[in-house]
Image (tube, rainbow, N blue to C red; front, side, top):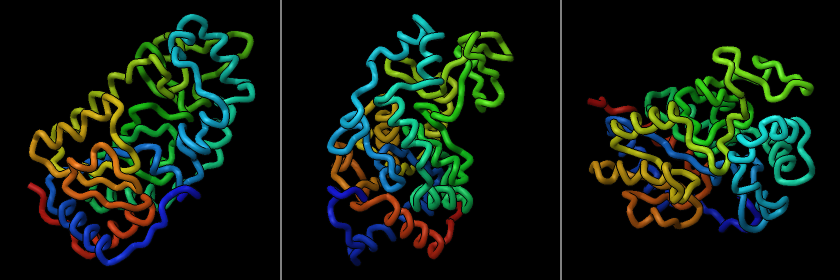
Length: 275
């Protein structure tokens, strides 16, 4: 929790609600999680806005970042290789130091136990993958990876040689320009990831929304679709959000503690047969 987060007490009422959530999850046909920046605060990654936020501290990134990249990809790559003091360097250093917390590990274990079918994240911090989750859909990309602007193939940085004298680098598969995988302001969501997200949401009858107010599209559409389809919506968030009145259950507490207890109750409940 951050210093300004509300004091958290796991009382009997909340633990009963978490047990109820475990029952809903274990009885669902298909469970999908949607996670946002609030889930990574306990890993030392502050939110972007507000007191202590990265943008508050370092200044906001340009709102036309993708258009700038297209206009001069070589210069964008020079800035990536040697970021100046400001939001880019602050974000890079913060992400490099972060480690998965209890929430990330619990989600990984839920997947391993067959209690979670897909995990859609708005975060670029790589922490779900570091925790060991496999079915991760990174709707805003991954700060560690590179992506081809033509065929959308993603690469580990070591797979694409970057010569500062010959920028930008190009895709070894199709020859198109390569950029960082993180989705910039003004950049469309990569179509391959978006298709996978909609496919997962189409079959979902129970969604866990954690650490996000889910107000930014297209991610904001996912819980609404589950509700329209008659599914169950479970919110995990220290704060009330615009989504709270629509949820079946709103579990008010930090992600690590709540997910830890949810995992405990899931193990005790056992998985029901999904049809």
